[in-house]
Length: 279
Image (tube, rainbow, N blue to C red; front, side, top):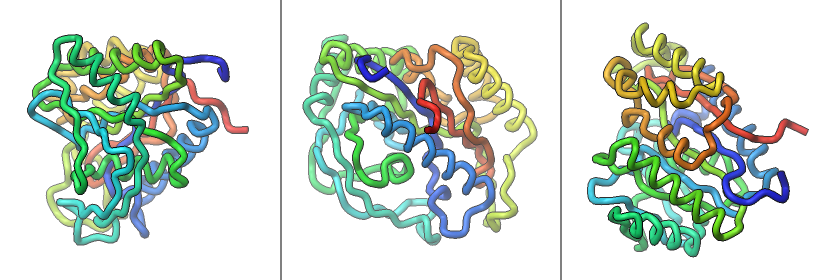
């Protein structure tokens, strides 16, 4: 593993801020603990760069790439601002050289690639939450692309494939992290954390079906039912984040399911591919 270059491992995590709550629901605490464990194991691989896609950084004009080497500041979540997990400080590190090469590759493939670099750019909650859980000591370097609202799954797979190609050509060790929920049926009222549950029985059934397929290594079957999943269970961003991960090649084998549970009615899971076992 230590001598491999290209994509070496990956993970899928929810980006809801509830995972950082001071008094979390049992499922929030379990998901957060699983994410921290994944982060520990990911950092043991010492990747040179981590390709990142968060469904909460969405764009409508092309594919946007973060080219600020050190975005930092304070973020107020637009939905959960009244809670202790609604205010976040962040201080991130991005590999701009790699990101520029990735954007160039996407552009060469005939897609619109835009570079973002200005002070105060609004970093999304999913990116902040995920980086806090996976990389509390800021050892990882990220390369991030937005989730284009109008890109189909095949296009996002192409964007992921381009990132993997750049990693191979550059001879670097890269990991992949996608920030996405499963079903997204929010409970439409204020609840206490202990009252949390998946919003609808059908959503629970669909989440279980998808997770069973992913842990069996049947990513193509999940992609084949993805549109039905989106219609029947309000899958987060039509679960196109999985297509991005599949495009990088990281999701070709069985996923390891670390945790699954509700986050204010939505479904959240922590999955990984090819991470080392705990020491």
